[in-house]
Amino acid sequence: MPKVAIFMGSKSDLEKVKPCAQILEMLEIDYKMTITSAHRTPERTYNLIKEMEEKGCQVFICAAGMAAHLAGVVASKTVKPVIGIPISASSLGGMDALLSTVQMPPGFPVGTVALDKAGAKNAAWFAAQILALTDASLAQKIANFREEMKKEVEKAANEL
Ligand SMILES: Nc1c(C(=O)O)ncn1[C@@H]1O[C@H](COP(=O)(O)O)[C@@H](O)[C@H]1O
Image 1 (cartoon, rainbow, N blue to C red):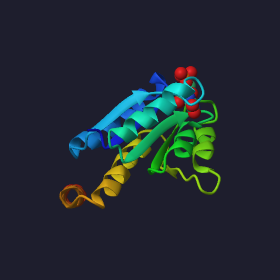
Image 2 (cartoon, protein in one colour):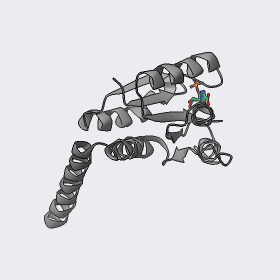
Image 3 (cartoon, rainbow, N blue to C red):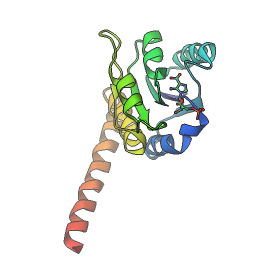
Image 4 (tube, helix red, strand yellow):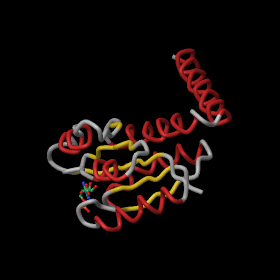
């Protein structure tokens, strides 16, 4: 049963979104990743939100570039937390997607992470932390990975 939904606006976003799925896999969190667009396939988007909620999904992650309305539209249809990953997909270098993801009207927040791959990774960590509020073993797993990251920094420092 997927706990997290990852939606992206286009197949062209996939390479930048893959790290999100990889982190969820590393944390052994069930997820469903698919392509849907609030602009091009509004009905599919609405149906997917409903389907995912019925399956027990707790967090929605939405990645989109350009006029990135996908996360906002998902936020309008669910009261589950929505995390937006802005994708740089135009000559504006991602500022278009960043602003259209983050600047939501009050009452419909989209927790917005950094652009592209770095943001994709943090979207997964953030979703995991939300799920860990009610899952002690997942919280411990996240803490263990943080220990590993700490060791990597110390190892790199020692090797300099
Ligand atoms: N921002 C949105 C939405 C949406 O918000 O509904 N649907 C697609 N897109 C974005 O358009 C960009 C170009 O898409 P194409 O490469 O398919 O032309 C992609 O970054 C996609 O996320």
